[in-house]
Image (cartoon, rainbow, N blue to C red):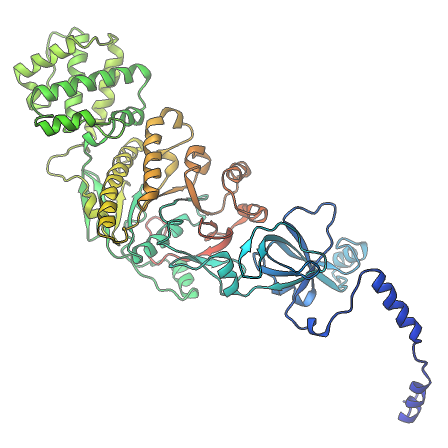
Length: 619
């Protein structure tokens, strides 16, 4: 065994080591200079940079650069993080966002090199030195005055990359506002909020889509709770009745645990009011303000009505003939018009917008029944439900109108039309005695949440009739409220209308046969943007939403969608979402969503805030 050398001997050995010749260092410096390398300034070593841009490759894409990081900095650049790139060679500053990565790559070896693969297979992975690689999408160029403009050039190779903190990221992406959506995925302290009183948010229409179980109900209920706090008025068409207990705090253990992690408390939504159609059961009998309402037949446009009833061409022709005869009959029996003001209004009436004033479904049904009896050569007069029409002189008047109406003579089509009107009449939802119609002025008060309980309708036609009438009623009332606010020089109350199962109201399969219904919705959407009225389309089957509806939407909350065909179609309709986010969409966890709002500089993957209120059918 060799004994350790004494210190004196070690000193003698060290002194005997020859120094490196000066010419060698000069040669290295010359080679580095020829290669374009410059000495690293001492101040740059600790200035906060975490990586540098790489040279472009043949497969490089416009608008993106590759960033390389030492392994100790990989964790400092999470997905979606924002960076500042200082391109010193041309004195430009760029802002970018991590679109893909960061990925870990071994130094000097391919990740699938044989030694690495073999050692990993045998349980003793070879761990060479490694670095990080991230693909960064350039958001813009920051000018010297702080303004951010679209980039016209690319950062030079070896440009220093610096991470932005949460405050800077929030400022650049415009994530500040009073309506919080959730936390940006990959961050611990970056909340995502939008301004509820900005015209780029609430008056712009929104889409909340995703497969069942993706978290849409959580998004909707949580958003309504925050809208109520901001004093917006909310109308929610609840087709399943799951929001009818939103006035109570959640009791779901998973949701309560999520609320605790987010430092939030379970609570019910205040100022909620539930409306159900006349004669229908309530989804939540315990709600303190649960009332019935009836539809008004004269508020529905006859053109929209014939589309919602899905009438054939022959039935539609007979429907409009009977509708015109009914209008004449109402005038003859002094139901409407009566006054000169009524007659003036009659001249200005647009039946593409609304129905004939004071006409009831029973009026139209009686006329069609009388026509069918005459065309069928029935010896007996049918029983008419309307007392005015049963009078002998008025029945004779109606027969005279029918006789001069040049009506089509096919009895089966008249009978089919009579059957459809009869089924709609037996629903007993129009002009029900003793049941009030919707009070739109009351519904649109600030901070009021109106839940339209359609859980007991069990009919898409009924739901669509309700939605069509209430959409128009809300729009007309909001126009009145907006004009009052403008005259009083006060801010108008924002109104949001949530349409659950929107694909059943405006489906791609039916849009060609519902041109008037869609035209009415489009008019409401167009006028609403100027008057703080926004539509929110909620759907678990976005593939059934027509392109015409998708074109109306500016703001999106997109939950998990696994169908690649649906994702492909959405990518064609929705701009501003990066390739990396689209690729993550099929694998999103419940509660995660891609948030894309007109107020945000860039779409983000977020963890949606848990809902504080109780949801039926979910808990």
